[in-house]
Image (cartoon, rainbow, N blue to C red; front, side):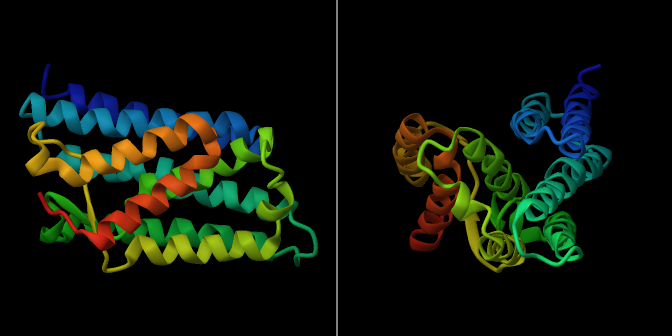
Length: 228
């Protein structure tokens, strides 16, 4: 039974992604954003369970990528498609450019599955981090505490974000993983620094902080790479 538990959690990730897609195409982007967060939690939990139960398997690895392709590949593309459709002054065909993120997410996941360098760290932005940035946009727009609606829905901002995230997904940039082998400062200093900086941002700024937190994650990785 324990061998199937991580895969069951992975399936919950996939199910949350499917529900997010249904809400996107129904126009409920805020609900979809919360479902993305739920999918990300399941994605994190299935890895923890697999390591704790020593239940890793090739099927589990493939299932994880298939689930991620929906929750963190198709979903962000659909959100960007919807937001670009709301942007003024765009040709009718241009919102489909949002699915460029979906294409590069597929490339990222295929690369991850076959890259032996990514056992304890990442090369390129992980798909959940990319999706959290995109999913934060509907939450920021829904509350818009800082008056960012006009900026976010500017077509060149959305198109620029699409290109930037697509590039980061496949970039040859080493990024640390939030996997703690122990709780010592020596082995996890970069992770602790990231959490100490990210948590106050999230508490103060809420969803608006998510793009900043991902930017912080990339910046810390570039300034001080960590592979353990």
